Image (tube, rainbow, N blue to C red; front, side, top):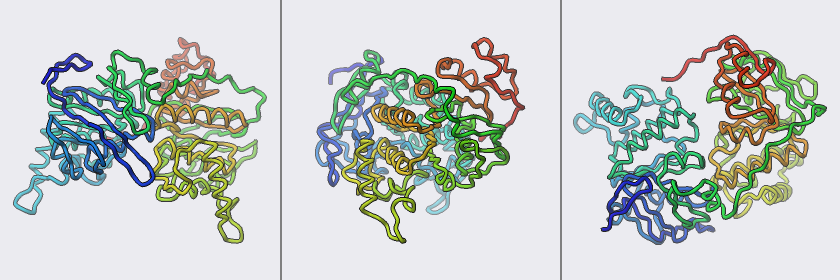
Length: 538
């Protein structure tokens, strides 16, 4: 067969993996139609597309969860027909899902080899051999893990490493990674990318799914784009721009809106938090939120941004401090109390805390307002719920066959819109968005951004917590920066830059505020407090 060349310049032989004319339908929807994909040996192939484009369906076909209606798969030039996920692993294809499939009470070694552990005789686990085997694999992959560490005590980054080791324990030829960096910080992403490059050898390859467009330029050789269940095209990463890739994904150009102007000084202060502290992390957190303002919260992982949100809505107990709404002190002991005060919290883990996944879209949208709007003398007002759900599905452009669709079957972006609809029905004055675009494609992100701006213009007050710094800079009227459970600075939209935000995010609470002088920040913008330490995971 004719030799081919990767975008990185390496000579390769036959295709490592080929997807040819694959079609897959489910009741009421055609998920894939005439799909094509080619993975070359030694390359990292990025697979991109909007939520609902068919990426997950294709991966489930490759990993043996579903079978195709039409089309063929080839692995190393031979027909590939996996009957189950375990069979796919045995044939050489391993997938690492965005949501980890680990057993927290077991050790690293036990998780890596679960289902094919070395045994003494027919029944007894050979723990010594298991740990030795895991140690050799860990060293070969240059992972900072120990076989006897308990997985539930590890950081998210190290759990990601365990998933990779688990996948490679089957001597995988093709490694599929679905949003592998969604919960990692920049340093952890670098470690992961280094591991991926070392895995992609002349006889192996990686399919890398990510909505973080900046990553693709760094890690991938080529990019395959799919849209609405169909193959759009494949481009060499070094020869394209991310703007061109985005245009292929969404079928249109995405406009980049200007940064928001500041909120007028005379606007009413809707929420005032003073001296907020919790037992384990938060210390003396204070800020104001004005009517019609988007207040961005920035900081590194573990800085305490989510903890602030949880404390405000009563999900975490407050040790000290006060919360005032329109100048009146309130005592919020639970998220239900917060909802009564018209404060809605959209958790970063929408599947766990924001939705009833097994219930219909209709039921989820009406969930926060059942007693208030949709009950009468103990009876549900089904017609009213359906009418309101239909209204918001249309207003937010939620892609669903009907309001009776099970929420689990929606794409991530549309699930996020259902959560937003739930709180809009409640007519909340204050909305706290925690990682509002995590796991959402670029097209859906633009819709979320537009929605947040519309809500602010309607007078809603918004707290937006995000790990994506460009997102915080673009969307916020003001930015509050945190480090180690404390506020280290506050910046207006006009003065905020990536450099100034990162300086404050890495500033230890006991450092001298004058260190920020070279960035043009006034000492009053910084809060210097005593150091607090937090015990880290292994």
